[in-house]
Image 1: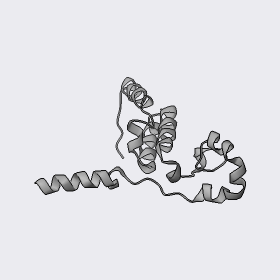
Image 2: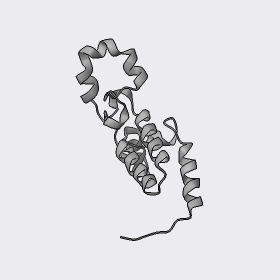
Image 3: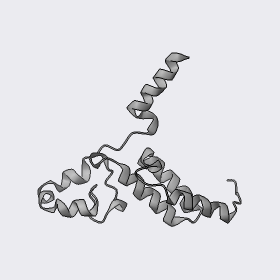
Image 4: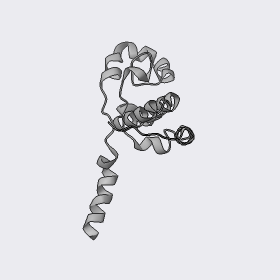
Length: 126
């Protein structure tokens, strides 16, 4: 295992930069595994708020039908946000199992159909 020394100002600047990223921009391109990896890096750098921000924003970027119902997501355990959960409470009395467990996590960036098409187009011109 290697030990590295990183200037605390560099870490703080990186954490601040990532703190401005959100589910509508950069963090929407990550899947949950990638989000957890990036968050783990910031956790190791003692930037715990940044790590939590990454996880939340990557999760928020997931389509409603693809959100991973991990326990950190919310207190009620569904893939819905707290507001969505409250709005649909009456319906969920009958469907809660489906909301909690039927999901399809988003593909890796490289596996998205438009990215595959772009790579195929680039390969055909070589």
